[in-house]
Amino acid sequence: MSEMTIEAATFRQVLGYYPTGVCVITALDADRKPIGLVVGSFTSISLDPPLVGFLPDKNSYSWGLIEKAGHFCVNVLAADQTDLCRQIASPGDKFAGVEYTLSKHDLPVLEGAMAAIECQLVNIVSAGDHWLVMGLVLGLEAKRETTPMLFFRGRYGGFAENA
Image (cartoon, rainbow, N blue to C red; front, side):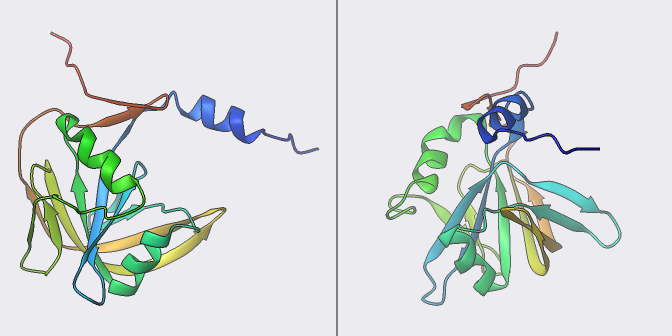
């Protein structure tokens, strides 16, 4: 049985038909400055123990800083936070003008996020050109009831309920 070659552009296009939520993974660096990474690959893994996961690119500079921190916060973004998402996804000062508070676990929680899930890093597994990062949930809170930010076919948007 021969393997079929999958073109990267085709892979990205077809999987773009699957909408994902958008989160910002935050932590503090060694100088206590906030660091952040936008992901669309967040998921729950286990209820007992409570584990979550996400998949950062192996070449991500921000991920390297978060890994060194040893713990992180998953900030679930709302549909009205597109500008914040784009800012944190861009190079440069990702947190210029960004409002956040520090949680009891000393993690940045973004103002306006729908939920915050604080985690201790427990495992990292190689997964092709990404890492599968697993975190033990230390605390979590639903912060705001609103429409979530979704990523679909290369664009950000919201969710519309059927009547």
